[in-house]
Length: 116
Image (cartoon, rainbow, N blue to C red):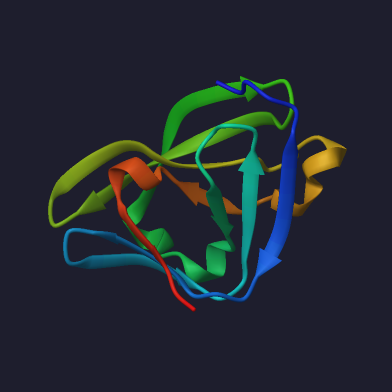
């Protein structure tokens, strides 16, 4: 759920690495870093930097009044499925167009490291 319209997005060249257990799911130096009020900082990554073969589309769709409609993916790692772990806004609202088509992981459910 979105609770704030105070959204800031900035490109970062810092290496963002996403892992589940010992498996690297994504690694990028082309992420968009989003802050949104008091919500956790999120990193949106290009699909080219994500192991898309580990993702399966979910039926889940949510709506945020500040970003638009998000669709979700499940992630399968070593035979275990993690539901709705990843989301993306394919056609976000104009104010947040920098995240269009980029993928975001729940930091709370994966190991997400941001390097120097």
